[in-house]
Amino acid sequence: MEKILTVVIPSYNVEKYLRQTLESFVAEQILEDIEVLIVDDGSQDTTAEIGKEFEKRYPQTFRVISKENGGHGSTINRGIEECKGKYFKVVDGDDWVKTEDFTVLVDRLKECNADYVVTNYYEVNDLTGALTEKTFPKLAELSKNGEKTFSFEDVAGSVQMPMHALVIKSSILKENQIQLDEHCFYVDVEYILFPVPYVKTVAYFPLFIYMYRLAQATQSVSMQGYRRHIQNHIDVIFHLTEFAEQYKKNEKDGSRAKAAYIGKRIAQMVGDQITIFMSYPVSDKDNKKRFREFDWKLKEKSEWIYELSSRESGTLRLLRKTAFKGYRLIVTIGKKRNGMEA
Image (cartoon, rainbow, N blue to C red; front, side, top):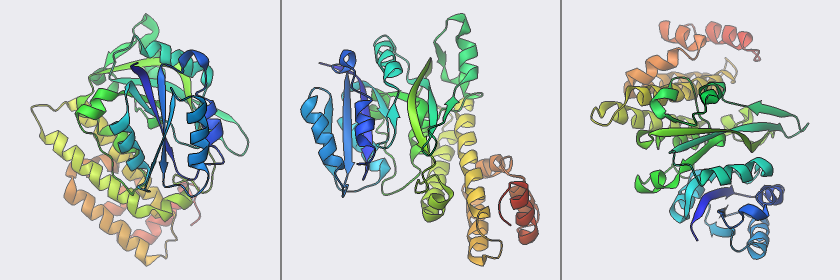
């Protein structure tokens, strides 16, 4: 039986959370319609065993794929390779879905043919349990007239679609051989942007699907995590910059709206990188050198992304104007302005 939706669960040492993740997909009315691929990325705990419990209980739905450790991107790559669903979604092994809305989503996907499907999601504070709604007002406004599907170009200028909100048509990922960097953090932006050249339509369902767990100090998106994996973040930025330049030069298949969408998201990632650099003490000479070399290399790779990134940070604009000669003073002021320790 053809599946409506493949859910890939990248799983590395997530025994603490995985049962909650997998239980959130257990709804009798959709078990035949979905497949849940638990991609065990060389875990050293009981992650695989927990996955096998669900595989045994619901063999028509859950499947464990154990592999050598290759990082988040490698689990998604394997999921793309193995998936049998019409649509594809990634839910990390320490997150989960809101079951009630998820069942509605699966039912709606049966009649949907859009390339990207966008849904609302919650950020969940892991310490307090507090929920923060993440919605898409522009898409909601466009949907008021009953329209559910839009051209990508019509929404690209006003909506950024994060990984947690996305469901992607599997054929786009498979037929265009979408592959993410392996042994690397921060590839979620690659997952968002690499399919964009092939996306024509976007659908929006105002359902709250993804429950995104925040406030774990060990997360790769914590400042501690960013510092630990700083080179991964830089590498992904440059890989994406090369991808963007290639797309922009392809006049035959290129779209201005798509290029602008891709460029803006990479520029935002550059802005995040500037915040990471600024989190180090101003007296750290190695960080200053790495910061300056990153900026020079970005300009060398893409004048376009370089100029776009200037809009993301006033501190960066000043550093560029002074050729980093006013580094200590400019960064100190920038840190105070952003509530960071000087």
